[in-house]
Amino acid sequence: MKITELRDYQIEFEKIRADFNSGFKKINSLRKKFTSDYPTSRIRTLTLDEYVTGKGGQTFCNRIENDLNEWGNIHGSFATKFGVYYGKFGENSTSKYRIGRKEFGTDENIALKKILSAIIELIENKDDLAILKKNPISPMFKGKILSVYYPNEFLNIFSAKHLNYFINNLGLDNDSKSELDKQALLLDFKNSDKVMKEWSIYEFSKFLYSSFGRPNDEIKEENISKELKKFNLKDFPPIESLKFDYVELQTDELPEPTEKKKNKETKVDYSNRSRKFKRIGDRGEQIVLRAEKQFLNKNGRKDLAELVDQISERDDSVGYDIKSYELDGTEKLIEVKSTLRKIGNSNIFLSANELQVAENKENYYFYIIYEVGSKRPKIWKVRSSDFLNDSNIVKEPILYKLKMNTK
Image (cartoon, rainbow, N blue to C red):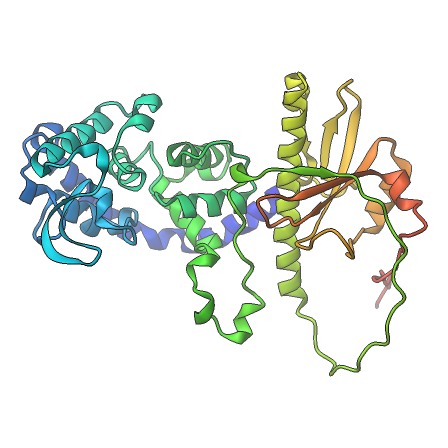
């Protein structure tokens, strides 16, 4: 994400940041009460009825899920996340103690002891990431426990879907499927920013939700009105799940234009189109940045991979998006163009500045990304001199700058 765009989001958030203060005081007081009521010595002695959800009352699970919901939401997933619970399952209409995870065995009392030991292990080993990752508590519940007990060290967002959504929106690179690693990545982003490093983690999570909302795919397609469907761009897959295919393409003659049907004149929503294009363009840059680093690392040039730079984040006036390197260390300037479409007929847009730089800089490449919203995007890498001199490509001016002086 460009720093200017991030600052715009932060300015908007500053207008409402103070509104969260009273809410934070209330929920933080409840959080402190919870941790005071449940030190590890108390957790160790909990009975089934003092632990489980499903029977009502002020149990460990009910309080951490419901009373502390404002600290971070873990609703929406089944009660199996707690390891053992009281209730029904599937078509079975009988309410009873049930074990939600195989690793805890088949006896609910033995399962409870294993679960409580695992919770204590989390609380006592917050700095040992290897232990935290191996711990058998479900990821969402694990995240909530760590954040409640260590509010200054663990992000209070626990859903993998939401973590992926914010990582994608911020344009961060990620290699891990672990929710703990994704939380740490977002916190590192927060703490490395001059503005956000002064915020509490609670404020940071509010910033993310107020700026970017929730994942689009949480809205069922059938519930979206016809007027809204064109605004709803599907969420991109997690960046770590992508596989890239480099493709060698040749251009062909453009088909003869067919006679256009006369349509009613409609006003173009440039604001919506710009937001959509920006999301697609940002994703393309994220893909290319990752692809270039992977290529250099796989070919023994880790030193160069560490130097790959997304210039566009800081300066969009240089005429290219990413500075990378050939294996011999030669600089490579990359302009990224992205589309949701499959390989075939498509358009890309160049600014006058991009065109001028592409025509005059050596080792300038266009990386055109097809199917940018899929798990298997296609990357066409083409040198600018070959691309711009291709007789099959038609350059069509569509924008004019009108200079004027008024008095």
